[in-house]
Length: 320
Image (cartoon, rainbow, N blue to C red; front, side, top):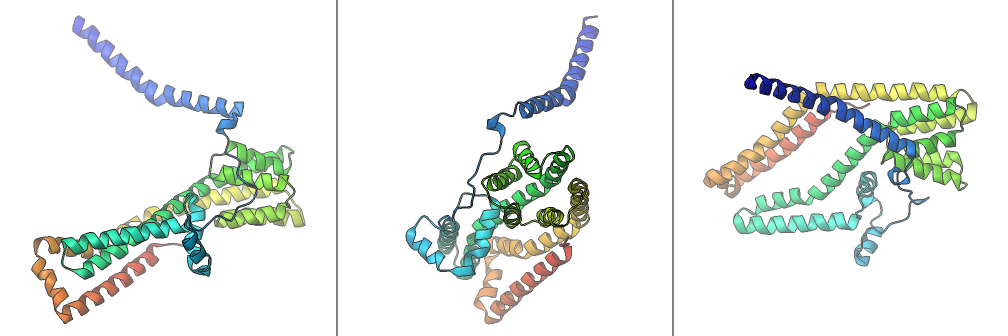
């Protein structure tokens, strides 16, 4: 009898525990989030930013800052990537990090191995790591923008349908949505509040957020202001189109996953195999370095590897 009772209590505890973890706890979390939004606690809102983007220094070192200021368009791609990433770093910091990694990698490998070409290649790869990190963070931030934008458009449409002005919808999005889109709409709302024309504010928003959906939103609002029409209905259809494009893009990524994985495997097999042979059979690799024909073969193989990788990347990348 004791065993039966203990078994019944144990099974009941397991069932209640599973119900609490998967049902009660998520509902409590959702209720707390809803109450927090209804209370409109200022601590939960996106932080207010400056009304205009300040011209930040390109580097904390004045010598490097002056040199980068005279570089013109050479540093424009890196500057754009840093702005899209939202990281509080300067161009000079990224360049100095690249130089430090390249120098350290070259020095270490030059002491460990007797192949200068391997040290140079590894140093070049290490130098590109800070740039690719910034690009990765910028890509993730823009993906967050894409996920939040349909909800923002629907909220503006609901505000317009309720009889409010467009600026009220912008304020609602700024208060309800999290960063990064909430902060951008907060800046947009503050700029127009302090007297900047709505068309100029919207165009600057489209420049700050380099997404096709954001440009379509700005174009729709500006067109409606010029020609008239039901803006709420336009925004509803725009939100549906954005969600459908987002759904199709994810489907394409799923379908093209095999091709992308194949591209990564084909791109990584030769360098990994070379590194393994360098460890287990260095004499075989030395032939490719010491013999002139071997060096020519290595150069041709690297060139073909780059061309093949770019070709596979272009095939599996679908533009929207």
